Length: 78
Image (cartoon, rainbow, N blue to C red; front, side, top):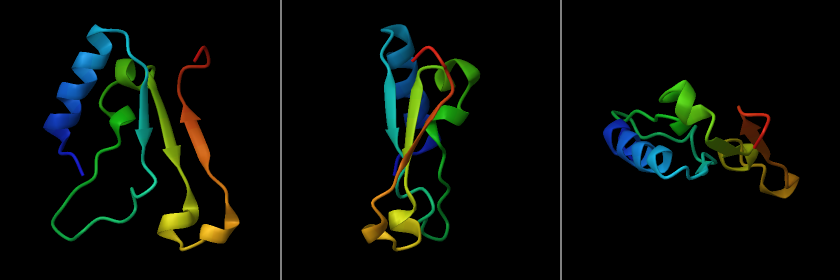
């Protein structure tokens, strides 16, 4: 898991070079005690507009057989 400072550095590079960010957040609910998870798209509105956030219930709720996932896209033009 990346810390917020690392995510901000990656986001700055992506914004500078107009790179679309695909953020795999499938394990976002599984956090070890003492750690904090930051979703890339929450860093700023500008970052959110360049992000596609991927999530699924399969890891958090042990539903691997369900074969479902979702994408969260802030920018409707992506």
